[in-house]
Amino acid sequence: MYRLIIYFLLVLVGVSILLSVLKIIQFSPIDITFTSFYFTFACWVINKIFAKIFKVGTNLESSLITGLILSLIVGPSQFPNDLLFLTAVAALAMASKYLIVWKSKHIFNPAAFGAVASAVILGHGASWWIGVPQMMPVIILGGLLIMKKIHRWEIVLPYLLVILVSQIIGAFGMGLSLETSLQSIFYLFFSSLLFFVFVMLPEPLTSPPTKNLRVLFALVVGFSGIAIQTIFPNIYYNLELSLLIGNMFAAVASPQFRQVFKLKKKTEIAPGVIEFHWEPFTKFNFKAGQYLEWTLPHKNPDSRGVRRDFTISSSPTENFIQLTSKFYEKPSTFKQALRVLEIGDEIIGSRLGGEFSLPENKDQKLVFIAGGIGVTPFRSMIKYLSDQGEVRDIVLLYSNKLKKDIVYKELFDRVKGVRPVYVLTDEKPAGWKGRLGFIDEKMIKEEVPDFKERLFYVSGPEPMVEAFEKMLAGMGLPKAQIKRDYFPGYTDTHQR
Image (cartoon, rainbow, N blue to C red; front, side):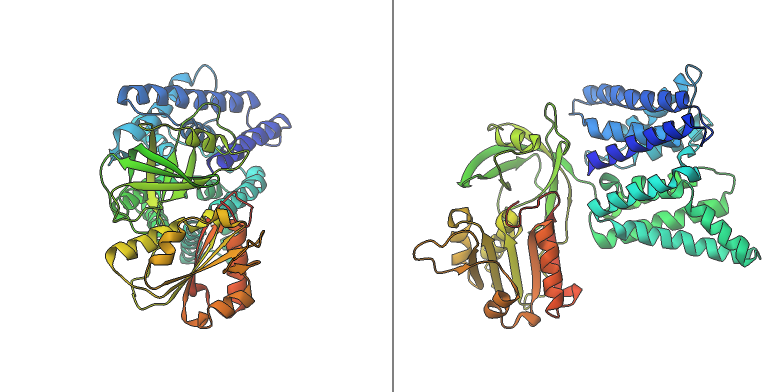
């Protein structure tokens, strides 16, 4: 996701330079180039300096994204006249990550903070020049691609609805004609607003980790912006300021999480499947089935970057944090770095979240559907139930290519209330008592005749999860009866 945003921002810079060369937009291509280069360079250098002072690791992706966003909303500036100003904005943005923190995690979107702080302190903030109408097709296309990747419509849509409704009410309240009102609304959505909505608003590290809180976050940002514009009409940084208010809401509603984990043990539990046991710096509470974002800086990262979301495969009742991952022949550089970690090495865990957890109603019948290493959240849940002595009616449909790929079978077989159904797709071993083929509607109806009474949990690669969601809907199950947990970027229908 982070690399996708970097590429998108670079495309915006490139297209804006091209349009300025062609005189389609009235900015200097030299100024755009200088501003973009200098902001990214300054943010990178200043971030390195702060990291050294505070003795923490750096994240190249984060500083690049902040620098590129600033270059698209501040300026374009002239060299060398605005060199000091650009440096100050970059320093204010990067400083917010290190000086305004809670539980070792920054609170504010750095680019928004830099823009607001420069407006207040230096009297010169963001111009939002990227919002010229000629850039809108690129912004809309790239924004939709980002939304397809990160699935954060619960932030984008409520926010846009609030802004749209307020604009309509305001236009009619002022007695404007229908034509003028429509023109006003049209202009609003062909402005800097869409860049803000697609790039800055859903930034993962400073927005809530759960869907319901994300909706509230969007409403807080939307109504804050309207209130600022209404009460203080002479403030021209209401977009950025409203986002900072939303960031504070997110920090209070879902306290930020970030800490270092030390590797205590790693074990290969199946061909290519490795369990990592981590010791957290401080103990923390989580629900079985939740995930962490794991950051592992390493040399020459590939296009997938240095961060991944992984389910915590251990139970909250265990005294360690467990990450279980599948490694293929040509893994990403992240996976390569993870695989060669030695005992005592460290990784950063942050952004605890996820709503893929057990229902409060203990009498609710459940079906767990897992593809390959997508079984990890179910390992966490079932281990938790076992340790708590809690019995729930669960059918586990667990698909793998080969028998040797099955993990945690001993646990699943012994926990009371759990009925595991093992499915193999690529072999038929001698004496096999499980199912063969793919999990389909026929198999579900045979193994779970009361399926309409059950809550379904589906975990695995995104294409697999989407296919099951469609299949279950076709079987008459409402959307509220299907919970999903998927791994973006994986296309194999069985493995993570």
